[in-house]
Image 1 (cartoon, helix red, strand yellow):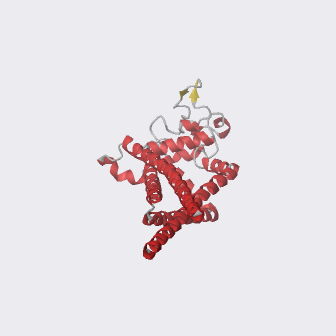
Image 2 (cartoon, one colour):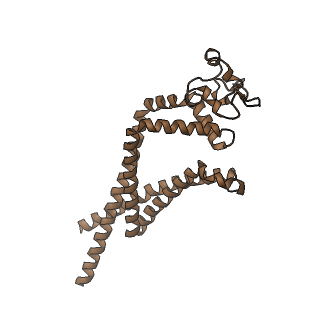
Image 3 (cartoon, helix red, strand yellow):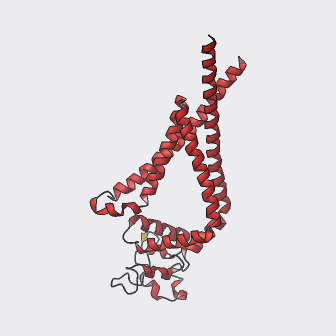
Length: 271
């Protein structure tokens, strides 16, 4: 009948949408997982002397996110292809939980903006303390300072917190800041000048402003968020919308599979 034919086409379309979208996110999850594992092995984080500090390694976040995303989307892929109700239910329940968690996190983040700012300040100060000892934190700190043209958490004198850049330190880096704080860190426009921030903390603000960025990164981050709030909101809504569509498609496909099986059982019973 036409209804049966339409039902079959609908099932095929739902399976294709669910499979293709989950396949795409599975690839994204595997890439994230690979990036995290590459970072851990590249730094030899699994060696005996580094195992104690592996729990604070930022690469673990990539490993965790990649693993969760890959397993979840692989469950959706296999469930759609095999018409496995158990896998589709698992996928739907976990996805519903993740959507609810994201909405709740957005509400909490909006209502606790002051506390989040304090957490960011604490996190950045900790990264500054471990700047020379952790390659990941150094890379992240340098990228933030270079990209946002800032220095320190609140201002450039925050680098006093670092044992190497503190003015009481014995080395050449005493009273200095990282080269990522410099207005022009490239010597002759090509070579990275690692000494451009030497002695910058000894300068007054008027003299220092021609050498380094004076403003802290927390203020720059706040201004960046305000300037790009529309884009951030759009991306968040699109991602949430995609997840809701996947959830609706999975639920609809699950209902259709159960309906088809019920009809098949009824036909067998009549025959």
